[in-house]
Length: 187
Ligand SMILES: CC(C)(COP(=O)(O)OP(=O)(O)OC[C@H]1O[C@@H](n2cnc3c(N)ncnc32)[C@H](O)[C@@H]1OP(=O)(O)O)[C@@H](O)C(=O)NCCC(=O)NCCS
Image 1: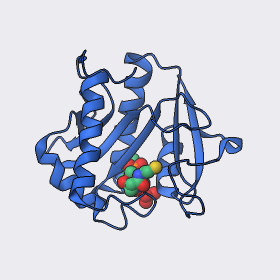
Image 2: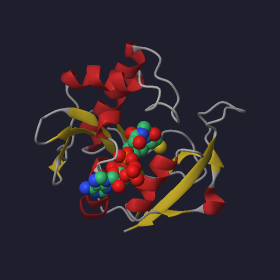
Image 3: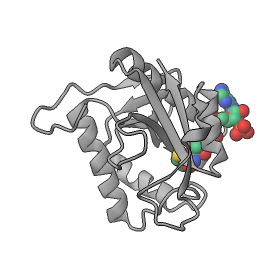
Image 4: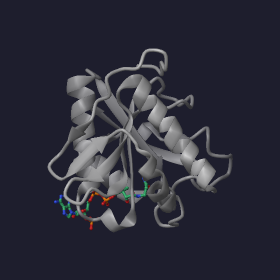
């Protein structure tokens, strides 16, 4: 389950009732940067200040999907074909108190909020993680006050590990987003 660009795996892509979860495309770059420019989307995330920063993040995600076969998939609305954001699984590179681990995460453009899309995508990703990848457990974490994200964690059946709350090492000391809640789910 590590990056291995030399031995590309078969890429797992899948559909849920309303969504297509797939490898990223060139045409996703502009709408993904639009998310980075929306202060409500970025309220609890570290900024992606420029288009280059945003594109670099997509490239890192794309490379990990190509190497591992899974990752933070681009989410597309099946009926209209629009790029909506991402949801998926990731082995964090940061040294977290519970590393090594596989996390589940999500980010959607605001127009898609409040319709159950993040939870639908996340349930699909959990199913891949447990049934196809054979993971025993998956974690999720979010900045302390990101109640919308924590609500997705609870909706998909994750339980908060209250004692596991931690300061994210990639968030600067004293930054308001440093403190994180931790959630867990077992197969
Ligand atoms: C976190 C985020 C993905 C949550 O999105 P969301 O749309 O609130 O989450 P869900 O997909 O679970 O949708 C739940 C909402 O849809 C409603 N809903 C409508 N139709 C629904 C359906 N068919 N099924 C389920 N829920 C439905 C629910 O009632 C709920 O509404 P509420 O917000 O008024 O309580 C979104 O806010 C986001 O992208 N935030 C910015 C990025 C971010 O912070 N990412 C997380 C970093 S840790």
